[in-house]
Image 1 (cartoon, chains in turn purple, brown):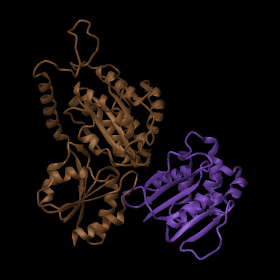
Image 2 (cartoon, each protein chain N blue to C red):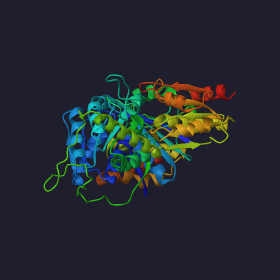
Image 3 (cartoon, rainbow over the protein chains, first blue to last red):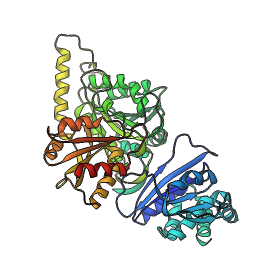
Image 4 (cartoon, chains in turn brown, yellow):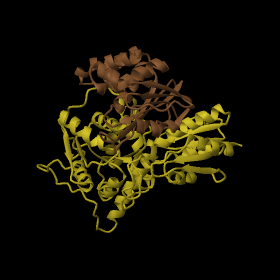
Length: 175
Length: 350
């Protein structure tokens, strides 16, 4: 098993945090992981993305051109990255912000109203973790319990945020 | 050792601390800004010297000053900043001073861009500054190796009394992956050893002069011959990694990020039944020429770099005359494509 995942959205939506959370969880599940961020010119309100690989065998390049899975938290990043999703891949979209038209596509689309679900959990800022919950349910690559246990590592020193993110993860999983 | 999820740039800092760094001087530049930022926290927390210099020139000359006193010192930068430091590096070499320099390469020439690249190979191993000197050059290809090479680089610098260069790139600097790190507590002993050459205050002993200016007839030649002897002795530090080379008719050669891409390509080539091996120099100077020469009797080579071809020249110099050496590279932030490598493999193994 080797899955190449792109997580993308506005700067400030927690794209990097979602990526590192997957890495912590993957490591906890004894898998090989790598994370590669877009860097440099990124800022709040701009676009941001990261590339995550989760694999059963050692990983070579952390950079890839075709993804198995795309998690897009906003419309511009969906438009930018969906052409690089492999045939038969899965695309998660944050349908609170945009809803791509229903047309024949080479990949499966999962629509999650992540902002709305996150707001119900207490803050719209947890939309990224809602998406990760949905990702866990749909793909089965990582056990939701493992991801849950990794939240304190990914949010080290931010104890106040642990509970709300755990709640968001479960809500995304059960959505 | 403990497995820890770590960013490449942070691994530089943690490795240096474990290696006993006393003083860090640096000036920010992408894609290595996390080093300077994280250093500023960690060095102060560990009660060591951190100083953000006013320029790269200042940083390398502060390193020079700290090295003179026998302290373990380091600077880090990315390509354009490393170019600015070349004069200081030549002086460090000329004064036989130990120091560690990390280059997290980005695209060039000039200011270039901020993407990971490998255009500084020549500058690193063929002498970026003036004079007949060499840098012991290490090339990590993972976060864990970034950590261990930074840790061990100080001992090497003192062993050979020369600057050690760690040549990495923006991809490895920015990426996060699990890395093996030491559990041993950091050394607290701050007493400077008297190595016989460092400036420790001359009260009660002969004064020492450290310089690279040798005007007396034959004196500079003597220094250069002494350096050459040391570079010869350095050859025992030559290190590389290889796999599937025994029966290979073609061997992929690359360092750093290119080697990671080669690793994927070699594995896929094997799955397709091609007899492809993998070879990665861990030291770029000294270069594993002898091992490449041994392998060249049986196999041809494909060198992959994130440049238009620099290390490939050293591979060509190393191998036997009738060996076929091909090159594939993408410069200035372009990432070599695995599919393209496989295509070339197919042609070369046909």
